[in-house]
Length: 200
Image (spheres, rainbow, N blue to C red):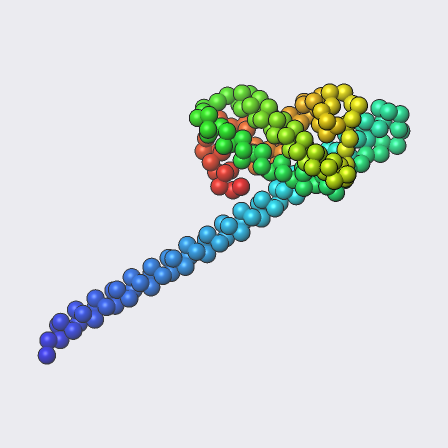
């Protein structure tokens, strides 16, 4: 009987079994890591959606209270609507869209901070106007639109006001900042934006 051959075959089998065990454990760890990243990403999205919704609510209450005061209402009564929460929550999309535009143009990471702020502010303003017009028109068709700018300065179909442009410019940048866009907007380092894109 060739005991040396049996020992060699046994050693080979043990090595193969050890390799398979390590490979299975590695795959298991990778699957766990993917699930953790996916769960963390969803939590980040939900958290940022809530943050944008609450911030929009607060800004609207503040703005309407100031408008009321300007009209002679000394109570500083602000108001908003439940419908506005998901509309403002869509502000979570501004940052990713801005990063996509930067990548599409091809100068991401090689643009001055002031130029990036101006570009993102203009883009955010246009996107907010578009969302306000679309959601306002839809809600108006159902007779439940919370706002009506009919007869107001620079009103378009009673659902947007062009004189709100500076306000939406700043609000869009605020939403980007709050949802993790501080590094993307204020830094010239493209790696900062890439690390943020992995978090969102």
